Structures are given as C-alpha cells and as structure tokens.
Image (cartoon, rainbow, N blue to C red; front, side, top):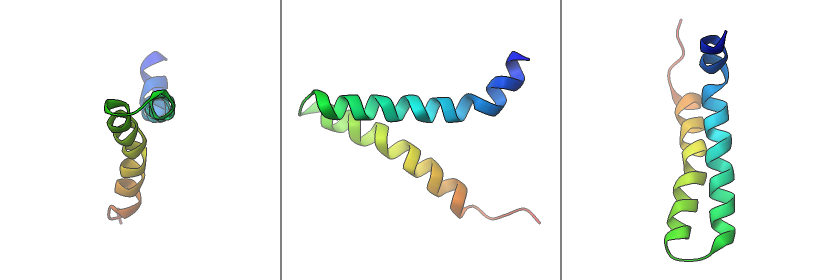
Length: 58
C-alpha cells in the first residue's frame, strides 16, 4: 500500500513542499533566500511545462 501511495502522490507532495519552501524563503529575506525561492518556485512551473509540452502517446 505504501509503495502505491508514493507512486501516485509522491510528485504532488514534493511539488507542494517545494512551493511552501519557495514562499517561505521569499518572505525571509534577501540574498541567498531570493535564489532559494526562485529555484523552489520555478521547479513546479518547469515540471508543469515539461508535462504539458511532451508528445502524447498514440
């Protein structure tokens, strides 16, 4: 059961955690936090673009 759960929900949970980290780091400060927030908030966008632009199977 645990393996099936992670196979289905693993990536959405990871993207949600990255989004939370990105939002919190954007509120914390400047400098390195700006880079952390940019990468953490950009990762879900890139994953979404990759899935939407990949060719469909026939």
